[in-house]
Image (cartoon, rainbow, N blue to C red):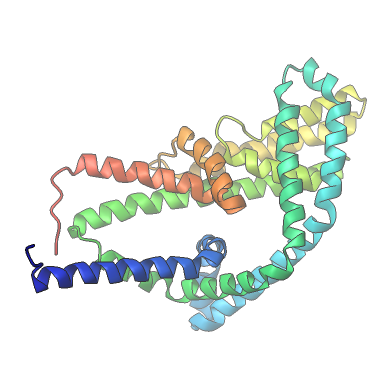
Length: 329
């Protein structure tokens, strides 16, 4: 039997040790992957606020700490109200759908009750599981806040070091990173942030004009705002029609005005402006990404699912456009 040269043996041993370390690292990080994903998303969303504060305070640590305090207060208030009202509202809306099925059939959107009912069941189960698991999530919350603090203060330096290690020429790096940045910005600010704004507006409008379960409807609006070919009008237009048919003309007019004067401009003007002309958010990738991402990663997968697919599409396009990529060692 031919002996393996020492150099080749040493190479195999190094690869084995590296793979073992990577696998052990994965096992260590596995309980905190969801928390880390949330922290990355939140750090990106709150980075404009951090930069604004840091320009005035001139202290990265203090600026990041203030951002975390603001987020913690906002998140605490939101979660307090959500946990107190979401499950009860979900039960109310399921009863409302059963009573209003004739209205949905009358306006020929009889698929909507089933769609809302499934979304409601998912939210009920998710909320109930979250409440039960709160004591065990304290460590995850602490990890998420720590990672978010690190990303705010040193995220740009980390990205610069990562860019330096990409084995491509500078022009190719800039092009590839630019495409990724456009995709991330378009998805998070173009879809997610505008969806959050529309959800808040709908929630307030439904509360003022006496539509039941305004918070739950706001969350459904957020989901619908991200999904392609669904859209927020599928929520507020039926509400207008149902209020009108029930004889509540003032409430119907109020919701109609909110939809036309606020929701529609957000959808038609603000969203395309934030997405940008250069970004190509493929509807099929978003749809499959949201559904698959939620199934794989939970609620945070609603963002990361389509993001991963869109980045994969851009990467394939990049490889096709630069078939003769020259690697730099």
